[in-house]
Length: 217
Picture 1 (cartoon, rainbow, N blue to C red):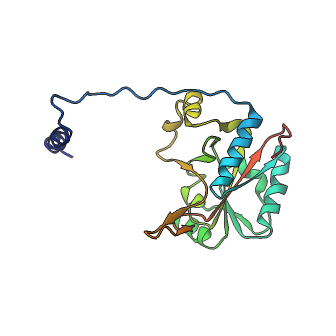
Picture 2 (cartoon, one colour):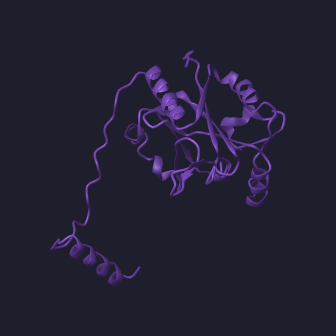
Picture 3 (tube, helix red, strand yellow):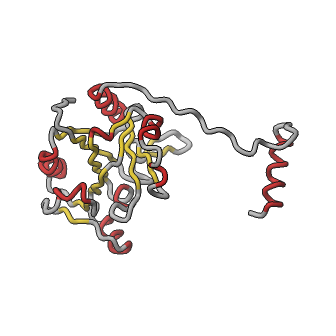
């Protein structure tokens, strides 16, 4: 966009809101607020908010239990797993393959399986959301194309909300051009307010929380 076009658009905005004079060159960013919440309360809040959006959750009480929990959830269904070192213990699960890094092959994989498995970089308890940062070893297609998305989330990465995450990890937005917040399954509604799941993404989100503190749901 040229400077002239930008100036013309801003002038139209000023006229529309009856404002005179130049707009502030830089608006101060909103202040972030941290909230204290015990770990077990964060987990309980996350699970309740996730379930309210139609998602489900389970807990692996220690990292060694992740493979068994994933195997039970898949129940023999075909899955493709992100090429991520955090998920290396899932290699060799029946009917589960590691994601190809070449885009066309990855797309073919994702269209032929029922479950896409990724690591969740963070969780937000107040909305029941997971945060997935796109990376070469964990393409976005894994969490978008298969009908079911299985996300593995380490409990220490579960924050109360987005403010708490950005205060604890101020450089998180510099890690990738794509940081996706996923809240429940994909859903849409038409003019008659008929809700349909899985139109623009997975129809179901399952989050496996991993910890060794013996937290129970």
